[in-house]
Image (cartoon, rainbow, N blue to C red; front, side, top):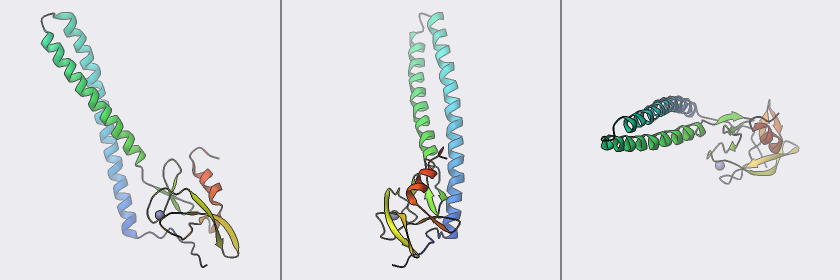
Length: 165
Ligand SMILES: [Zn+2]
């Protein structure tokens, strides 16, 4: 079976698109972060003024309940933004490593369908055998490589995990 060692062929337009979306993602993340910080501050302030209101005026129960509602709204918004920040962080663009796309947590992704791959299998590389990865979308093995040399896929995957030696 003939194999090609160039699963990294990416169209220029695709690259530009990925860079573009990475920039947008970064912008959105920092915007969400700013909003999050601002809201958290507002939440602290509103908690303080609520105490004030309760201590100062027994008659301003209406004001206190308004503050309570406002506080709850802010809390929900802070939670929503925190979730969004988390989501944006996880949506970091895939990086190319060993000729495969790899997410921030070190999970290799298929070059074609961009879904995570977990299957290993032997593949023929010239006159040798190497452990490669197989995606469900294709029968073509994905041979990991570095400096033109094939790399054992399980070893490479362990190395891709952040913090691994
Ligand atoms: Zn695939």
